[in-house]
Image (cartoon, rainbow, N blue to C red; front, side, top):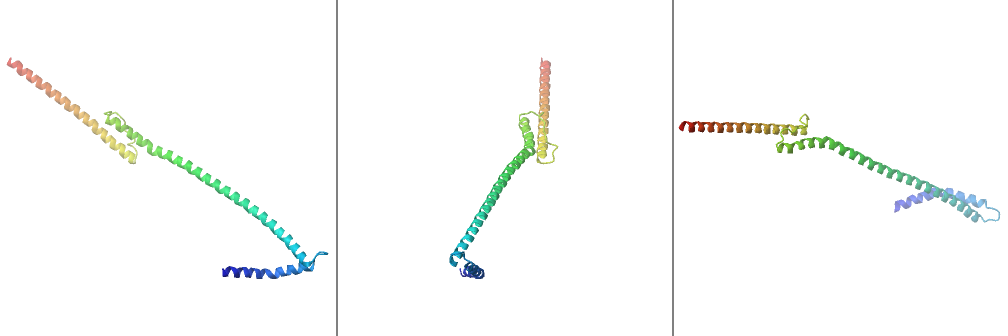
Length: 178
């Protein structure tokens, strides 16, 4: 582009006086039997070799730094993944203990009560959370079941007493008729 060309031109123009002075100095002091142009070429070759070696050394240093940074980034990623797995496992275990045990305690009682085991303990009613609410509701269900059994027993006893009274009354009528 035009802007890039003008920047390059400005850089060349800025470097030109120094380069011109270098060429004049090299041409003014050639070695014995050497043409001034050869002296400039030799000196420029030496300087280019030095620059090339410096560039190679710097390139190797930068490559080593990039390799170290890359290894550090990979290590940081591995550590982050490992920490995530450990923290995730701890969270799962904690949730299992916080949620799993109360649920298991309440759900273990439900089938026992459904099977008629009214002596089954209801655990967790002391809790002030949803599991406590569930356990208290289960206690109400259990108390109603106990009351139903008591009422049935009382009803059966009353029926048996009525049947016995009817049998006695019939026996007394039969004895009076005979």
